Image 1 (cartoon, rainbow, N blue to C red):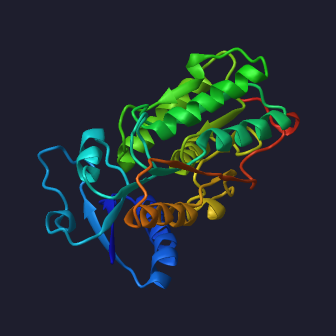
Image 2 (cartoon, rainbow, N blue to C red):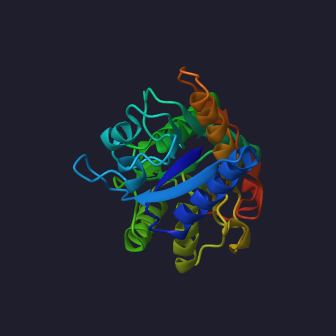
Length: 289
């Protein structure tokens, strides 16, 4: 028996590390059962006219695990009439078995932490709302403010329209967003980011403006990527257990291979990781552009 794992071609080390961790989880489940794992890549920006991966054309696997592309129709095409499980679903109302992180719970942890530190003027930075991951994290951010009876200020929400950003786009977006936030009459004292990479760029942009993190501005990430613990300052973030995602997805696929037909969604609970990129508001200096 052979299991296929389809992943978008990695344009960043972040994407590569996620795929690697998922592979370890998958292999932990299937290897003791004498099953082989076949890893294949496809373009992230695939369209319906893009040829499907060779392992599907040649029917070389008994079932597939898929990290989703940026196109919903392509994902449906890859999974159609196959035993398949999606890892990290990024589309709403997808009628396919999937394993996803409880992003709302993760962002609630971040917001509760910042509230405990005394922050009330909190900004949000993320990429495209075409991604369910970003939508869920933004909704939890807004819900957190609502529960604290803090008026929502759309000027504090900074979003990029692109699904994935080049290094140049990331740098430009973060510098521009930070400049806009700092020129507000009441700038934020904290910024929550939908990804660790955004947090990294914002910290670098803040340093260029001679702001001290966390003394002048608290910043959080999401994902706990391989570099988060080694940043200066080390990044407070939310750990997404990609290995556990791979394990859960492999278990679901095995159930399908053995005859199960139900569609299910498995939530993986994230973990809050406190490091040094946040400070209590009472110890923070005021921010000025």
